[in-house]
Structure formats: C-alpha cells, structure tokens
Image (cartoon, rainbow, N blue to C red):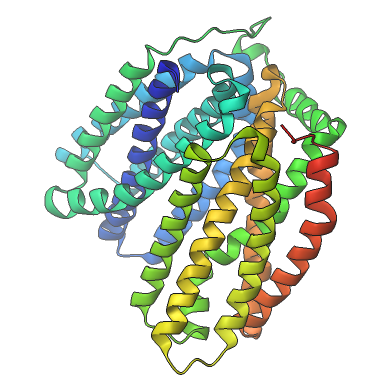
Length: 409
C-alpha cells in the first residue's frame, strides 16, 4: 500500500480507537453522576437516532468540500473538544446537560469524519486494491474495538474521565497532524458555500441516483439481506443463543464472541494476503453459501442434546468462526464494489444513504428477531434463516453478482 493509504489508515485507527475509548468512558461517567440506567439508555438511543438522521446531510457536505481537509479538521476539533472537556471536569465544571451536548457534537464530528473518509478512499487507492484496503480497515477497526473499551475502562478506573479525555485529545491531534501529509487532489468542481447548498435537493438527487443505477440497487439489496438476516443474530442475540437455549454459562458467551472476533480477523487477513482479483467471484460465491450453511448448522447444534457440553461448545465455536470468516469476505467484496461503482462527486451522499438504509434494516432485523426468539427456541429461527438465506443466495445474490454487477474481475 502507498504512503497516502498508510497515513489514512493511521488516522482512521486513531479516530476509531478514540471513539471506542469514549464509548466506555462516558456511559460510566453518566452512571456515576445520575445512578440511572434509564438516562444512560435514553442517551444511547438518542445518539443512535441522531446519527441516522444527520448522516445524509453530512454526506452532502462530504460531496461539496475537500474530504482530506474535513478529515484533518474533524480530528483537530475532536482533540480540542476532548481537552476542553478534560479541563472542565478537572475543575468540577460539569453537568449532565454538558455531557449530552458534548456527545451530540462528537457524534456530528465522528459521522462527518466517517462519511468523508469513506468517500475519499477510492481517490487514494486504485480499484484493484480496494478490497485489500477495506480489509486492512476492518482489521484496524477490530483491533481498536478490542483495545478501546479495556483502555477506556482502565483509564477511567485508575485516573478518572479527565485523564481519559486528555489522552484521547492528544491522540486525535497527533492523528490530524499525520493526515496533513496525505497527498490529495480536491477534484470537486463548482464548490459552494454552506449557505448555498440545497441539502434536501442533493439528498433527493442521491436517492434518484440509487434508483437509476441497477448495479448499485442489486448490491444494496444484498447488504439489506445481510443486515436483516445475519447481523442481528450475531451482533445482538448470541447471549440468548448460547446462554438461554444452549445452556452455557456467561463465560461461554464471552468465548463465543472471541471466536467470532478471531474469525473476523482471519477473514480480513484472507482478503489482504491471499485473495486475488481473478478468484474474487469464487470467494464471493463460496463465502455466501458457507454463511447460510453455518447459520443452519448452528440452529441444529443448538437444538441437539449433546451428552458432552465441551464438544458441543467447540462445534459452536468453529461454526461462529467460519461464519465470521465468510461474512467478512462477502461484506468486504460487496462494499468495495459498491464504493468503486459510485461517481466521485456523489460518493459521500450515496455512502451515507447506504449506511442509513443498512442501519434501519438492522434495527428491523433486531426487532423481528427479538420477537420471534422470545416466543420460540432460537435453534428453529436459525434453521429458518439458514434455509431461506440459502435460497435467496442461490436464486438472487449469486446470479445478480455475476450477471448484473460484472464482478468477474
């Protein structure tokens, strides 16, 4: 990978790490200040909904301004905000409403940073290397997700939130300094002032663009399928599957999450170091079939009454490991193709719309899955998802991937 990408991925890593450190720090602070799980829950839901609502508008900004400049400035502003909050907390000038305001501002900054860097990536990485670039980003994201919460919890428990914010602020600023050296040519013509941008018209144009481009519609449908069918089960319901229906202790829930994380890293590593462009189609077809077979087998194993629970859990861990390898490969290939298929001047908007649609699809999948699993054994639901998913994969996903998206590169 070239120097620009190395600087880019370093900036993304530091920003992701900062976000994940704060993910643990501020909930703990809110809980200490209010002793209320309700307030904590409301704050979390509010930020999630707020991000979904503002993302399309920030996508418009990413399409009208220098994306590298946005990337650098967002890191600097994040760093300054962290340092200001650290100073206020150190001097006991803090309240619940101030924390809410801070979280809202950081949410805007983080979302604009993500939207701009998503749109910017194909400008600094050649198309044939985009899957590898996205797999590197996935590895970095997994590492920061693993490292951030323990670091945040350690800093909070030993030194308090002010030191956590101070460390975070310095890292954000260092990240911004490194990103200055990315060589980037701003190619957007007819640059507009913020007051001149018709946000709703530009979002509407983005929706029209998605409707007209059949290639993107098929790819987006595939991502919606993943979001409704697969992500909720493995991102939310694993504790129910392993503990309630599998009969295992909470320790095994943690071990199953570890198996999935290792699978994610293995999948990203396969793309980075082994997969070649001429074998992309084979990887895609095979990974999608394995995805649904693993879901089907997980349902069967959860239902099966094994005499030896250790053997049963080992089989479950292997299934989860294989699922995540396959999911990461499929997801990276589809997302990279989606990314490179969008015209540069509209990539921020389309990327943000994709995120909103997949987030809403995931919420729908969680709602449906939660209601179903409350009423029936999760094993039956997994078997249903595996069989229907396999049919959708064979009769829609694979044919459209080959014939309509021309991915036989």
